[in-house]
Image (cartoon, rainbow, N blue to C red; front, side, top):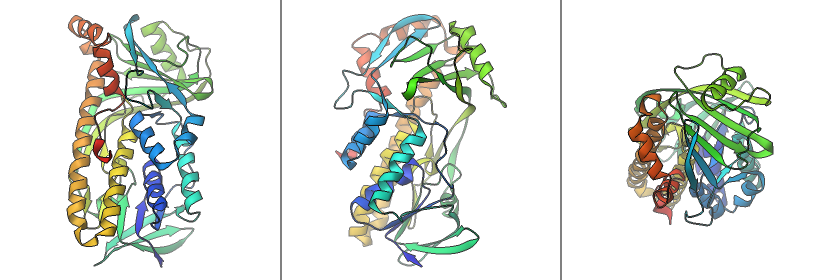
Length: 384
């Protein structure tokens, strides 16, 4: 039976980051990941300055900067009329931009980092079947290649997503519900004149977001009246053309998907010797790009909590309670910001009063404050 300090259920971007931080400090950990390989779809793409600061602290930020694209400015439109710009140049340094990089590349960087610290830490094709708490630790049984294996540790961290097996095993309630909003999303070759700028269109028929990606690609996110069951590139092209007059018909599509949005928050982020992080602990709307970054903020707080708990094992319950309280507060703040982003993008909120308010918000000095909110400033300053 493999002995560890920490077991991590889930080897996505949050589990990998947490593992890297623990391994850096000399702790032994095993990551159990059900997937055979990294998902090749781009999915989440925006890394906010607060996360880049964490990566700098961990000594891996340069690997991201070499592969990502720096978005330093966003253009705001009302229907097709440009209202103004949101620049990040007045935000706190050193990272005065949002870094655009497909999630598969983010996970690749984090996986390579973990493997450089401990080549055997990440076990793929490992489906967790059972988690049992012992008097002084946790035991997990997982299935791989037709066989069952057992791994033990002092604590187990559930980083295993929205449908977390770890959370269900710990019987922690996951409170929340879906929002009424739905979107269609696609990555295309970039045929705009926006360059490295993002563009947000608050249109009377619904929000359109457009973000640059590395390698001459661009992501489009379009508000829809209802969830599109079979998303096709032609449908995005039609909506973009109808609302803002831009033609994507000749652009090459690389990824098309549709999604609804939800908000869920675990009642507690721990039970006994089991902790939760990432989507296993909380799900917020992806509009605004906070979800994965919120997971990293929580993973850093989780790491600091685990480090103290391993040093002072008799006090781990109190430390877990503090972790849960702090991260839940951060999540609630982030959720409110995401809800405001969605509210602005709804067709029913396209009246004159909202337009006038936005005209003021996209001009200095209000635009400087807006830039800080968009880049998640004011969240998670507990590690400084």
